[in-house]
Image 1 (tube, rainbow, N blue to C red):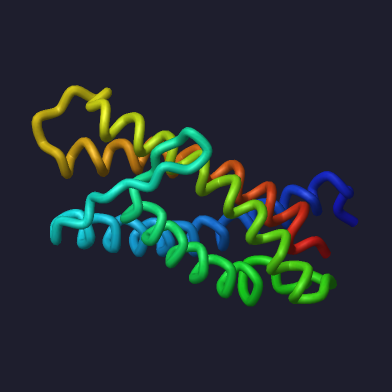
Image 2: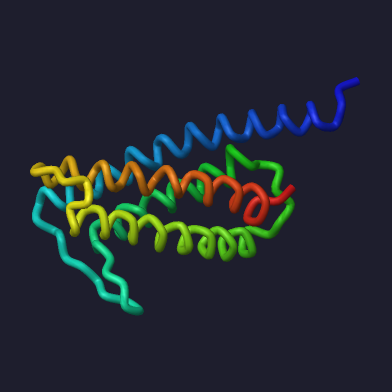
Amino acid sequence: MRSVSSKFSAIMNYSFIRFSVVGTLNTLIDFFILNLLVIFGYTGTLFVFGQSFLIANILAFLIAMLHSFIWNRLWVFPGSRQKPSRQIIVFVVITVISCLVVNQVVFNVFYYNLLDTNNVLLSLNLAKLLASTVSVVINFFGYKYMAFVR
């Protein structure tokens, strides 16, 4: 009989692998939409509560998160016993927190050219990659232990 800790490790690895697959697809969707919008000149900003946000990044992030909710609910964490309405609310709260963090990192790195590149798209994508790394941690633990609790 396997110990509790080995069962926990197996479940964590299994759900994290699936989460990683969904997350990779989310990232591709996110980056594709962001780049498409910026290439077509959509670089407007939104100023909320003293913070500036790149609107194209918000749109890309939210579309990717809709994809994320569907696949995380159905495939990554399918055994969740919570009502879908509660899952959506908790998922949205976690996603909004993650979105605020991601957008602030992208805005600061991109608009202040903190990576000191002469290529706008390279700078934007490196900023997004950095921010996405932070988002993975927030989202996995938030979704697993709050949104899709078994």
